Length: 331
Image (cartoon, rainbow, N blue to C red):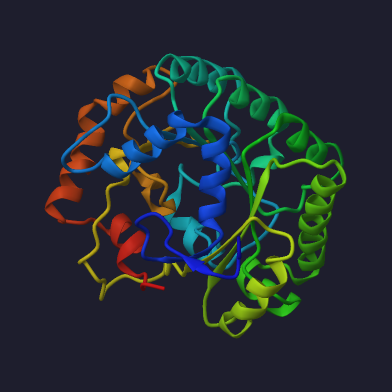
């Protein structure tokens, strides 16, 4: 397997991928037909077919972060527009997570993500929550982190639990470009060292899991480093993603030709207390249900999320969707 060979990444035109076939092969070998059925359902879910339960659940464990990324909705000039959604400093209640996982086990939930908004490793029960996810036996469990706390007991626990994938968002190949994309130049080497040492920990213990993914959001300040980033991380990572930039500051001139079927595939359980119909960060403003009072199944079939699905079908997009997808360019 040559990780330097560019490969298609699902149906996402905004990501250039290196190594996805290796990931699919590994998970296919681990879970067999169950994994292939999950991937078939993922491809099928959309305007013409809605599964009875989400195919993927995302848990946004913490509404806080230990970086200061200018590209994030937490940036000072953007966060002011998301009062009540971002900046609450709330944590998801662990008992709530366990209840949702218990419900999801009854529906044979195949896919779980943790992270992607707040830094998930800041949750005091992070390892215990990962353990609980693995106990419901999904066939794809992905953790998304900035890598700052990927060390010591936390790193060892990820290997011991056999988590499927650990995804480290880096977005730079120098302290300068890291500062432009992630906000803190002095943290660059720590992130790199943690990810490299994690790969070495796996090798030392002869462990296949977790598979290591690193990601690079390509933008003006780092585009000149893309090739070097791919070459360097090919020695350590199982998969490398180069993603196009979300311009959350854009307010007009959007490309409305995109198609989005996220609300037909997954739900995000946001730390502030609401459920979202997609994985897009601007989509945090769409609260489609109170998961403290309603089941995920009920929210999935409720009128709030169906309104969002209708928007996807008619392409009469509101600003949140436009800022998520309408400002992106195909890689």
